[in-house]
Length: 212
Image (cartoon, rainbow, N blue to C red):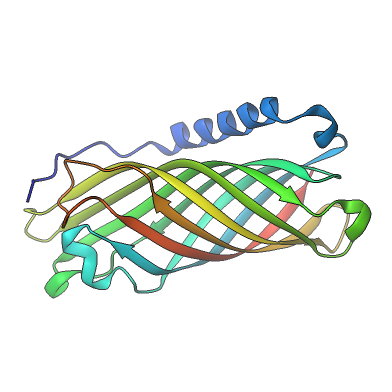
């Protein structure tokens, strides 16, 4: 079992700058006709993380516990079918108390750039608009133990995929309800794990949609 090597956590300002960069990059990749008549949506959200699985040794027994999560999505969504999104999320105490309640603090932060495929507004009009979303990005996980001997910090490439609905109650404000799954795509040889590095979970959220 390898020991972890502490890594510095990403600063919030850097994370939000990277999120804006994701949005701009994905927007440049999208075909122009698909992004005609677009809306900029800022979506702060809260929710729960559940059904977690991991090979990080100290947190494995309690990672499946439900935990509160929060974050914000920035989405550019067209009237047709295509959009792009940058999504950042934080889940404190992600791994729970761990083996024999030895985990003092833990958390997972995700930062992803995504493509959004939505039902065209010509079909939904102003009713609920279903969509699917998927992309890749950073999964940053950290676990700190009371004894400090099995502390782990990992930065992993991750995949997210999910779907939901967006609806508006006024020209500028609405709501989003979404279910999304996250899993890692890479290993971290410095993490204290049982076998290869594995980390996955589901996220169920409700968000306030601000349209610009």
